[in-house]
Length: 347
Ligand code: NAP
Image: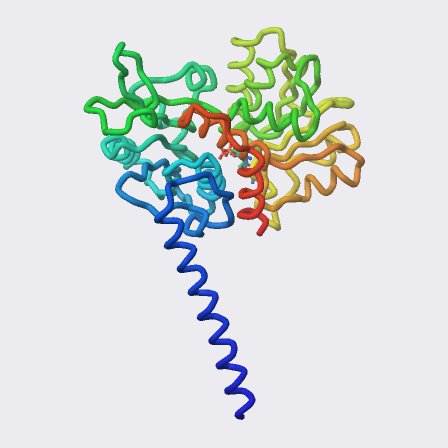
């Protein structure tokens, strides 16, 4: 009995000592001038400066948004850049999107990321569209801007005090992120290649257009709802008539099979393609936009078939890294952001 009490007291003393050490470190940091410090795990950890009246904000809006790994990734990037900014997540109903964007604009936010179901809605809400948003037809990044002395629109992050007139400008960083992830994670360059694309939802459409714009020779498009695949095919036919486009499975080998459906998110999901129509050993490389779980049955099957494989984590990283660059005007610390993302997503 006495021994247990002694052990308990010893443990309590250790915890008290650790708390005191943390408190002293925190007090020291808040007294110091702000400096670049390595980001650890969470926003509230000692490596992040305490929030004060000068803290500026970015955020992701989605519905739902609880699953989003963007706050972990972006706060790591902001901390590494030494900025007194924070990145938050808000569950915003689609009908509240106009007022939620206006609210952030009024409160001097730096920018926003938009995820499902806001990317198309935002096209009609923001004050101006960057060419990327016009080209890819959706907005996943908003940058708030104000006018400089010459009347040119500049990122709000460059203004210390809240300007009177602020506008929202919509960008799309998703399309570039797909291409960059394919290049980095699979050493895949689109020009002249043959691709099987599964899915014609928002992400499938963006990937199809990006692949076509990057010079893919032949694209096979498969989607559960045929009419959606037809709409994407028509769009590609109009914009990139040089791409050979087929609705259905390829008769032979492809350089890349890409899953842009949501099949694989749940453990009991079927494969995103019909094994009666296609075999993965006919694909040299396989990309699954899904990153949670890290290995979907689609990826596992591809590995067993000897394909080069990658999941969607790199895509998530690069759309966020580009958004950070648009807000800060600085190169994104991608290695740190990737590490934070991996920690957040895979634990
Ligand atoms: P979306 O617009 O809702 O599209 C969903 C796609 O999945 C459609 O093609 C849909 O087919 C198909 N699908 C859904 N349930 C199906 C089922 N039971 N059987 C067959 N097909 C089914 O969503 P999204 O934004 O394009 O996202 C698609 C996937 O990409 C998701 O898994 C998402 O997590 C992932 N994603 C990843 C990133 C990243 O950064 N890594 C970014 C965006 C999206 P129908 O048209 O027939 O409904």
